[in-house]
Length: 196
Image (tube, rainbow, N blue to C red; front, side, top):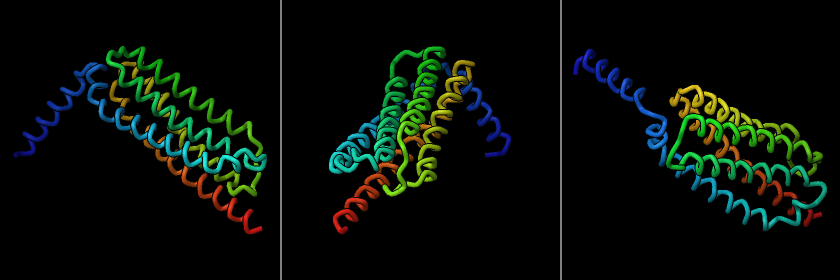
């Protein structure tokens, strides 16, 4: 193939993409949201089971910031699941999609900061303030990306849906990593308490 033919084919493909309606755009993302929602609900179930094994430690006053972090992590999985369910609804209008995404982005930010600010911090439980801030930064960025996607969809720019890949990946990846760190820190604390 000559470079001219390649450029012509790329231009035709780009033109075809721009002619898609929002419904057609969202339909092309069906498997992505199905996979993201399935991963979120599976990881949330595993977090429930794992934390239930250490529930007696989480409810101690010195661990209240870890309990808040566990709540935020569970909420991250829940928000990914809810966004996925909204995006799998069969009919979409740009305004409806933008409102749903906007509400989820605002609610995610609000709950994340509200739950973590409510807990006093105790460094002896294994997480420093810096570690907790770092663990909150990624879901916050993910929720901001969801808000930007909502604005883009409301303005008629369906290509903004590509930002959802970054937001869902950040929220899910961070929640999975936080879940692991929570379990390791609680297990270390329990082991130290048994030795002492």
